[in-house]
Image 1 (cartoon, helix red, strand yellow):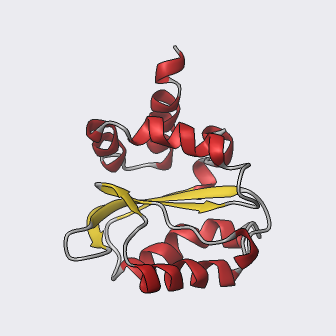
Image 2 (spheres, rainbow, N blue to C red):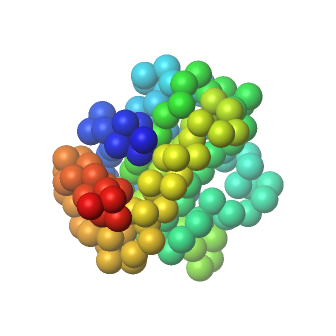
Length: 151
């Protein structure tokens, strides 16, 4: 499921961003361009973090911003941004990988989250993704780690 949602067109790599809000905007931009989300979904993710704090930093170095399906999701989708320099979602929350999750309901994305957990469970796997310079490298690592337990 994860490899069906993430592909080279939805993966970006950049050196640094000004702030976490820009990181979310940049990370979500492929989904917006493909009309999988509406612009208001991006603002809803930002508003949610501003209201509730950096709860989207689920594991060190990784944030998974999301909002409600009713906030402007047109199609189940994901995008990923890798930063060479961290952006801070809080004083002690440096993030290098931002994964945008846009779910159309409360269940169809669950298998993708299970796959994502497999990818993010080892700090070395996250570091290997951060070390990638091209989207194909990121995709290859995700495929490798997402299927590791199934081999």
